Amino acid sequence: MLAALAVTDVQPESRPLADAAEEHKAMMARIAEFGDRTAFKALFLHFGPRLKSFMMKSGASAAQAEDLVQDVMLTVWRKVHLYSADRGSVSGWIFTIARNLRIDRLRAGSSQPYEDLETIEIAGEEPSGEDVTLAGQRAERVAAALAGLPDEQREVIHMAFVEDIPQSAIAARLDLPLGTVKSRMRLAYSKLKVQLEGLQ
Amino acid sequence: MTSVHHHLDHATVLRYAAGDLDEAFSVVVASHLAMCPVCRRAVAAAEDVGGQLLEDDGEADLDPGLLDRVMAGLDDVETAEPTPAPRTDGEVPYPLQRFVGGELDAISWRPVAPGIKRHSIRLGGSSSLYLLNIGPGKAMPEHGHGGQEMTLILSGAYRDAIGRFGPGDIADLDVHVEHQPVVEPDEACICLVATEAPTRFKDVVSRLLQPIVRI
Ligand SMILES: [Zn+2]
Image (cartoon, rainbow over all chains, first blue to last red; front, top):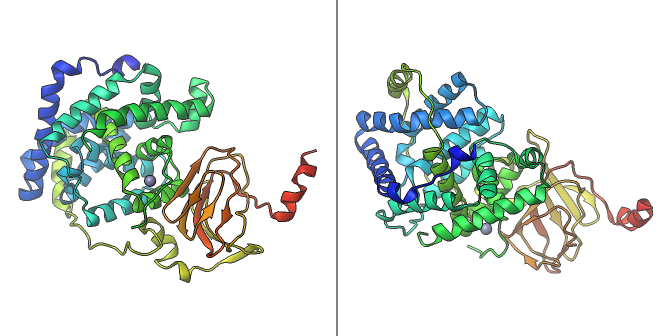
């Protein structure tokens, strides 16, 4: 699992990564402005297979995962006007849509608090002050920061974000006290934060 | 906006971003986020991490018909426009308003101990969510232990060993921290609390009896 996780060789890949992030923003702009279906299709072809893999790792069956991919992508289309390029990456935004559906469908919980918060964030529209040209750099930085984490910290991040394992179950699976899992998360976050801070 | 001094634990920021909190805790965290730009930025950074993992973690082949089904589905989707800003200047943060309305004054309270009133919010899931209204100068009741708990101050303030907690501040503490908060003398303190295990109140009397019970 960790082998698949390792985002090694970020340096040579960094230009394409930044370009892809820029391209995704441009696609979102075309969808928002013109209802551009070609741009939407390109976004689907990029994120669809990733979303399916993500949902299956979260515990969905292949069929269930495809239903969720469909719902995520239709939500992207429906909410395209609510995405704001200066608040973050397209992949981060699509992740939040996928996460919310995962809470509602796979965990039988409620994503309503997240939706409420989104409502006031959009209404408040605080500009992040981030130059849009830094967005690509941001993608590189996040990737580099993730790749630079020690295995044991990346492992708990992966379990929480991709495999959707509750914190207490992570502790049980790794046979660690809950406090150790929490401190690995805190350490991981503080390293990621250092990488992202320059851009915030 | 009041300035916030006590923030979310970074482990909580990651759990919230990953979707690992149940509804009671999500409501408390979202309510703090509604009042705290610092933690909002922290969550946004954590969500970018989620985006990067989505980007890099792997791909699974899609059913060849899925693209066509999605493209055909677009016609039935009405695009959402930003809604007018909801009221966010009051004491009730927006994510809490659906449960208790927009005014703290309009909340109905049930007395649970002298000077202490409670308003429960019923949700699915095993965690409890409730508001506490604690009179000026009163000690905060101890909650039942055994699980995580989070307290967000909505109005008034209390002091404990850690410091002063006023509106917008959140006590997101590890389970066994003994902090013994006491409400400031001039005003009642209203706070939103989530607890993992069912909460058992220990009133002043039972707290006095505790040393005996432990024997
Ligand atoms: Zn905060």
